[in-house]
Image (cartoon, rainbow, N blue to C red; front, top):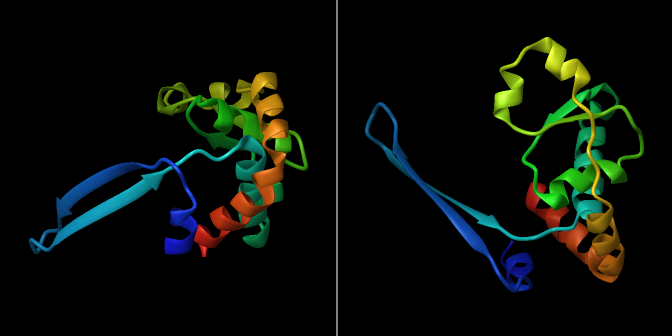
Length: 130
């Protein structure tokens, strides 16, 4: 992981601190850095395929960031709906059925411009899942 993170130019960190019922303290750090839709889509599909659930997935709840919205364009199948945020989950089953995938052509063009680094970044991202 050190090697993968050393290749990244800019990183944002989320820190969480909590205690369990026995008063044991925990600190969680999460590193956030930009990945392109094509990489994210391929890695998510690969992980879900390895779990043998990719063909069962009907909906993914995610934020509206362009690189997340664009990942749906890189799945090998259609029919996976995107829910924009948690509020939409609370609107009931009808919203789940009618949620549609929203793609971003400008993000797709950006992904194509960065395709040279995709394989290395995809490998790095996959390493973080193992």
